[in-house]
Length: 345
Image (tube, rainbow, N blue to C red; front, top):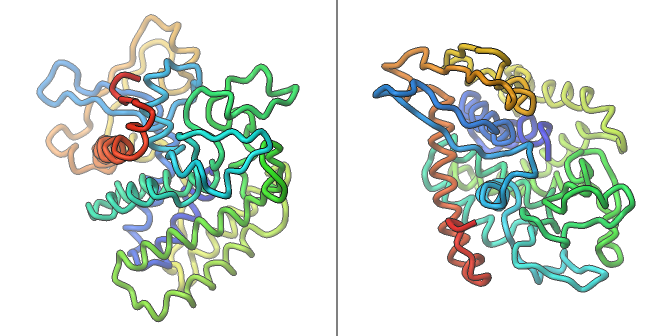
């Protein structure tokens, strides 16, 4: 999934499920920021206020296996049920790390976040939970299991859905996963995304102790609204801007908060919190270019006395606790089957 689901649709889900406007905004921003939190910062280095974050995404799929394994199965490709009927393949292969929608592991990780009542954790968990629908039948690791085996894909590393490129992430796309059997080959992202949205909304509805008798009506209205907003088939994603405008229009209606949801700005939380002293090339602008830059940018807190109350800091702490909890859950059911220790990968 991309920004459409992780930010805009997530906001609409949260509003339908009873969160306030401010809570829904933080949850939605946290959900999308999982994909943009791809750089480690050292802030106020060599002082009492020193801080370093964890990353929840990497744009470099050639990172060492250890770093990939700490990111992808935790935040983007939660291992599910390898025997699920959604996994049936023409070659008969199965894999214990295969992502499957709404799996037991995904539910446990999501429920662990809900149990904290930490809205930053909830946003992060919604991201990884939703991705079990979009990223189904891929694993967050190097493996030929991910291979789409086409001419164009032969030179792409078999990590996650790299071979499938953006196919799993665009809401309006209908595509073929030729690895699968029969009717499973035809994939409608719109159907997958709406199923994810209603399942997440139901969990949030009960989390917020909303009236059970009103759930089905609200789910049906969400299905109708998202169906209209995603609208027609879009094989090239050229209509994304139009869809985003429709999500924003929905946010202005009474069912979704009566307030215009502003467009996502991945720099917002960081810029509110951290001073950036650029030395040479800007490290944040192009990490591939700046790695050849002999100068390192300097980062300091804008308010050293209150940085722990900022959205950026709270999100980063939530990333750390989410990773710890998810690792423990996956060790109990999945990693133990493969005799895997995440600390050694």
